[in-house]
Length: 262
Image (cartoon, rainbow, N blue to C red; front, side):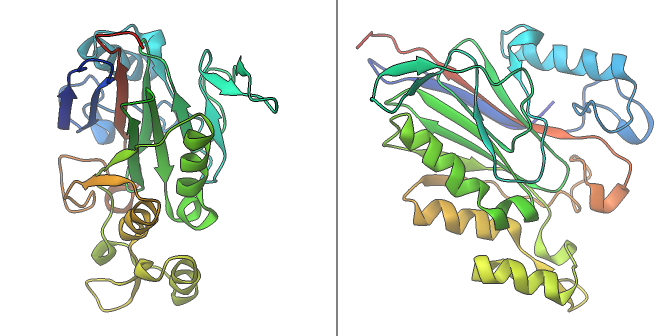
C-alpha cells in the first residue's frame, strides 16, 4: 500500500505529522488499474476506487469523508480546506469553504481531523508541513503547474496563514531520462527553472520537473527530503508515460494535534 510512510509524533506544543506516498499494491482495482488505484477520473470501476480510498482512510484512522482531494487542473490555483482559519484584510481570523474537491493544484489545511491527498502518475507530488503553526499542504506539480508557479503560490498561501518554518517531502515522479519532449517545450520550462533542462536516455530533449520543483523549494528556504525513484522505471508505481491507461497513486499528509495547547 505504501511506497514511503513516516509518522512524527507531536511534542509539547509542536504538531506531529503522518505523511506518505502509496504504491499500486494491496487494493481492489483490476487490469491496467491494478491494484491500489485512487483516481476516480481514469476509467476504473468506481466501486473499486471507493474501496481503495476507504482502505487508505482506515490506515490513517480516518473516515473516507475525511480525505480531501483536489480536482487537479495542471495550473497554479491554491485552495484552503473548510474550517481552516485565514486572515482577512484587517488581520482578523475567518474561515473559508472551498468545497469537497476544488479545481486547484495546491491544497492547504490547518485541521487535525482530515488528510490532504494529491494524485499522480508521473507528475511531482509535494507534501508540505509547518509543525509550529500547524499547517500542511499538498501540491500537484506537473510540467504546466511547475512552469506557472504552483509551488511558489502554495508557499505564499501557507505564509499568509502564518507559516514560518516549512519542510517538504518530494515524492517519486518521472525522471528526465524518461520524459522526452519537443525542444521548444524543454526550453520554455528551462526559461522558468534552468535545472529543468534535461536529456532523455536517447539523447533528445527532456524535462526534469522534480529538479525544478526542488530548486523552487530550496530558494524559498524550505527544508526538504527528496525521495528517489522514477515512476516510469518502477513497476510498483503508476506511470502514464509507461502505460497510458493506468491508475493514480497518492501523496498524503495529515496533521497531528500537539500535546499541549498554546
